[in-house]
Image (tube, rainbow, N blue to C red; front, side, top):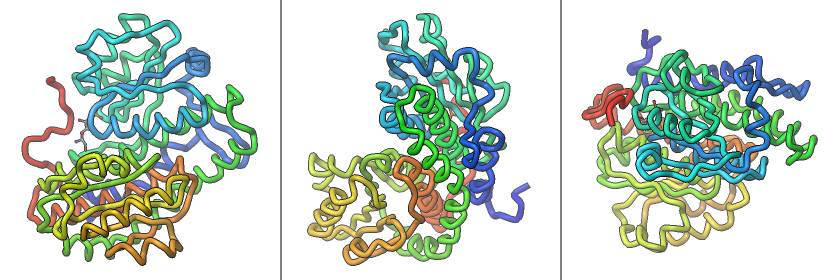
Length: 366
Ligand code: M6R
């Protein structure tokens, strides 16, 4: 059942070119400009005309929501709030008419997400579910929704479900933006063309596996890691750190790179590996300065960069090159090397990657 892979997690990482295409199948066609999510019909206008979108999730699904916040705000010009389900449900949240909720969950059974969604529903909100497990509680109790169609995810650490969530949420945002007219036809078509190329670009990232094994070997005994990114890559930094923590038991923190100088910079010395997600985008120059700041304090920099980057390889100890794409789609690409890095480090440390200690695949109790 592991299809020749040593662990489900590795199999699921390698399945991503296919799971992302499966997620797009029948929904997106760049050559015709078709983009349609069959599960969102009756309430589609609620989303298009939403005054505010509230996204509710936990863990990795919460990271998908953070990426989606940037996508929805940029292209749809709708304000988005991303909430931890466990906080949202206990603080008497303000929900107004015109607010729309998107509940995101791989399992569709996370207790806090389910309860938060029920609370929002009782206050009159329309709920869209983004779930992987068909027929799960969150899927059944939403008004409408879209499945991620990533197939069963067995590894406790979420990988292919994350990229499928990003795929669905981005499709939702582009559909809304197109309907609203908040992006030009040209930009929309351009993005669809880029989007369709993502599975092939993920495939290219998987070819980096051998290089990542070598880097993992050098850092497997580290006791701390810092992950830094800006813009669309900030949630990717959080996700990279979570992956490392949960399966290798190495302490890791993800931060927006600019926040470093508000505290975490104090941690940096020659023992501290710092993973920068520094692909070419609108915050590139800023992140280059952040890399310089880390280098000045002798931190060891591992940088995820866009193919052909000439500057960062002169600064970083290790560079991992990924294919270029639109910055809004980059998390689908830039997260892949981070999944592999945490996987290999955990295996080298002798950890049970598919079933890490203290964790369950779905958290059905609060
Ligand atoms: O099934 P869900 O997406 O609702 O699960 C949410 C979190 O429990 C989950 O993403 C968790 O953080 C994963 N172990 C992360 O890899």
